Image 1 (tube, helix red, strand yellow):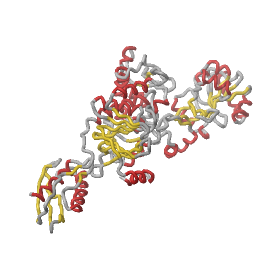
Image 2 (tube, helix red, strand yellow; image 1 turned 135 degrees about the horizontal axis):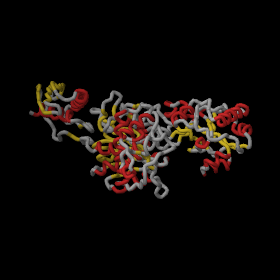
Image 3 (cartoon, helix red, strand yellow; image 1 turned 60 degrees about the vertical axis):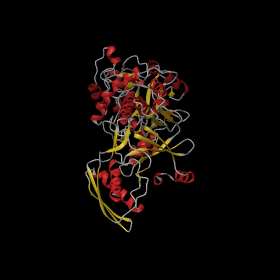
Image 4 (spheres, helix red, strand yellow; image 1 turned 60 degrees about the horizontal axis):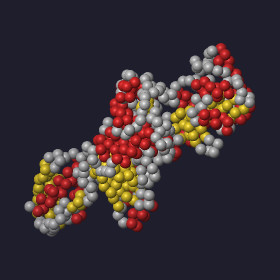
Length: 576
């Protein structure tokens, strides 16, 4: 255990003795949408669940989102007469993903999304009125998004999940408890739980008899990790959960988990730095009424009415990833967004009485900027955008005062993470299952491809969290803690002895040689167990028996039937 701990924790454990431990059927790491959904589903079966959250409150990314969710074939759509299906949801989402999502995972999500919406309504009492289009995202082919009302100032989904957690006395929540490492059995590679540091700085181990679910979120709040995969992200505005620091990515990688799509970090053209230096999402959307985008050179660079993806891509190609959304007084009045009006009045969105004055205000070349505005106004007058082919030429930019909102790419989440199968079991770099380890939520990689469709960012963690909670309780439990095979002493008699016992895969035969009352040799003559798991276990246990000169060695936590069978065989050989 010690070799995995940092120096401070190593000193702490050495000073305080062995680490304290807690045990449950299931350990869930992360108290966001996925973690809470997983805990509720596991608890529903009667399982004892430990839920760990490193922050002082549950919620994760749900505390940083407007709460839009999505799903096809819901009872809400049926009541509205909307024909929809998981297959259509899949096709819309795959287009938004640039066809780079892992098909099996995306299809699985789309099949689970509709029932998850119904679950929110029927089990968690989330009030959802209707399915709608969500204009802040690329539109679905049918209304498939839902915007639950807030409850007591809190997102309705978060409120419902918190109420759900409270219903189950078999869920124990540990706040301000940060998981730092996965506990892995050296013989079988099975994950037995996590080591964590609690609010008092004490190292504690939490053991999951049936499994451990990682639901630690993304890595958008870890600037170093973000820049490793997106070097230009230092110029972005990231509004992600404060706990989204890639803890699960790191812990998973340390036990050999595969990582995929780590470079996929979608952004929106809404990143704004307030006058006080705080980042904010500012949804100006003046382009809906005739506003345009210019870069730091004072030139247009994209069709302002194209898809969100294309606008995002275009902005990320501009110098310093900076753009100015430019509009005039008539467009501001037509737009009439209260928060935008307030920013214009306060001066946080720059303004001036002339185009050249606005250029000076925001640091653009006045000649270039003025030429850009004049050229665009001519396009509006003649009804054709010769530069970018925009068809919605609604208004000239001609009525003072003139405004320019300085915007950057805004990141709300990351789309890369651990590789899993369709039962949420984590896979290693070779595609093999890591026993005892499950994952859900933003921690997963491959579900959404390059971009995420409307509402999928909340619904997918809920759907896959529920699935992980349902699957983990089906796993075969294993024994935790050290147990002794036999308590009484064994009198060793010189000679060569054999024994045969039944093991997991069939018969296991051993030969033991004793000289001068010492065990000098233990050979496994034959076995039918899985060699990749059994052989390392046999080698380790044989070394322990030879060193102890006894078959009475402590079985390692999570030891398989194979290792137990070896102990039994040697014991029989030396006692019969």
